[in-house]
Image 1: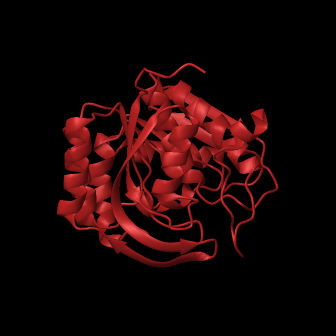
Image 2: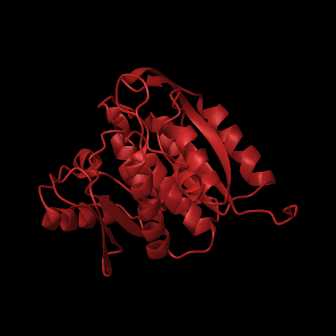
Length: 269
């Protein structure tokens, strides 16, 4: 077998950990490995978390987050960055400042609550997400609950997704990906930059083990961007990857299990 000598594209996740391994930093790094890029991490918070929910969360100091970021970016460099759980207004503003000075596309997953409904972002941090973080995003990827948190817009149908996208784009990201997975019927998402619309549809699988879908999707998009794909191509590829991961999701513990980040490898075998 030939020894690989080329350096793969580098992707940085700035997010919290999931001790159960299904979401957060752990899901991000698994996704990046599966998609052929080198994953790196800046840890923003530690959670005690399992299939039943989040039992505790502790954010890291701003100085620790800044030091991790500078350590990686200044020496190794990045081709794309993904943000997830940022916990507090101070961390949101610090990360937004760091991103503004980094020449790489940014995928912002504005994580507000966990799959189980546990709060992962302080209420007072929402304005910092709107005014500091979203303006530096290449792609923002809110689900319908996060749309409601950020804009007050309730989305009952696909027309509502258009209104939600317009509200999110008004905060400054270049593209908005409104994730409609909470609507009935097909799993439909809307990607738009305010002019072009891309509707992405996939079958809805009867599988409740969907922990980590948002983290996985955002990391997959960042991986595609690092590989040189444009935004629509990166999002389309990420949607296909996540759909397969949801289909292969498995039971773990007594609650909601994770998606299967290695489904393509297992399928090939």
